[in-house]
Amino acid sequence: MQTKEAAQNEAVSSPYRNYVLVMLTLVYVFNFVDRQLLVILQESIKRDLHLSDTQLGLLSGFTFALFYVTLGIPIARFADKTNRRNTVAASLAIWSVMTACSGLVRNFTQLLLARIGVGIGEAGGSPPAHAMISDYFPPEKRSTALSIYSTGIYFGILVGFLMGGYLNQHLGWRTAFYAVGIPGVIFSLLFYATVKEPRRGATDLGTTSPHESPSLREVLKRLYATKTFVYLALATGLHVFCIYGLTNWAPSFLARLHGMKNAEIGALLGPIFGLGGAFGSFAGGLLTDRFGKTDKRRYLNIPAYAIMLSIPCAAGAIFFQNTTFSIVCLGLTASLHSTYLGPSVAISHSLVPASMRSLTSAILFFALNFIGLGFGPLVVGMISDGLAPSLGAESLRWAMSITILISFGSVALFLIAAKKLTTDLS
Image 1: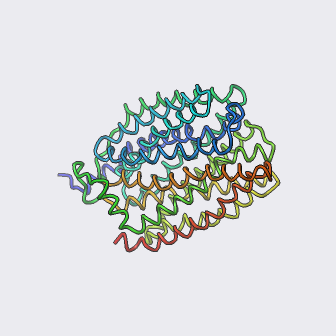
Image 2: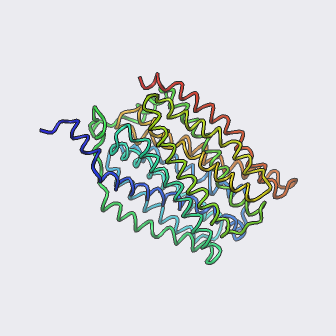
Image 3: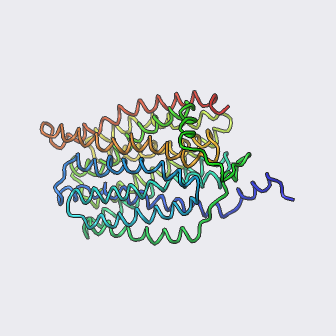
């Protein structure tokens, strides 16, 4: 008879888990193509629909984030009780349809409603995917697996910027929305047909029964009592504020202050943010899994050090007048910024049982997206509008510089979380 440990090892070693990881990563690629497409198109949309920077910040940040994070928790709660594969497939179909609908809008309100629809769909994407990955991969490989999954963010930005910049210049921004929305619907059917739901806790000792589903109140109570998670949620929130405050305004920054054209911006920023971010994400997972074997605190210390190194790079990207130097600094910043996500999710999952993982991811994503995605682009846009009468185009440069100051707070919170980790894990 096969032992429990042998059964777990068989599940872990199955080549099928790698296929599932690839499929989930591709879903995440679609997620960020659809989410970030607006960013590369926003200057053209601003001209056609007569929008302000504050309205652009609302579209790419706060309004999207409000529905994304608010619905993420109940959807994750639903996913913890039911089939997570189905939740991911349905979510992909919904956000893809709403992305295609974005090409039909005629005014700010209609585009706002379409972005709300994208946010509602994407709310059901990552938390169930995180939980599935944690059930396919054992604890000592989770950070790497989750970091590979997180490369979907950066490959999504790569595809979105390259495709969006090209289509916008040659066929218009409406065609770009159609071109990325429709394939997502088709891929959702392939995902549903070929990906299997894993057994909950399959790679953990002390497997949790699928019928043991704690309440939201129980999960919140446990996480609030876990000081590592509290500081980690705040740290990631501030860090994502910096990421979106810089990334979402980078195309407009290069267009207004460096005189670059849309297709040129997409062709440059796509590989810089995409490949640079993917490298940083993968390296973050690999380094933390390697060095975290002897000291779990390194799962949080390594991202803190990377963010610290990113601060002078971000300053160079914003303040260098030379376009080449500015773009090189943007690439370095993107790589260093992206090391945090895989280790952060892996540590959050190590603090809770398998039955709480989807909900834990949703709560972590609530914090990082509400603070970061919700306010990063919006605050930068509002500051830019406020400074524009006196500084003109330079207002955006100074508005983006707020991300440098916020990074110091993120570093401090990551280091505090690392200090609390040993006690919380024990």
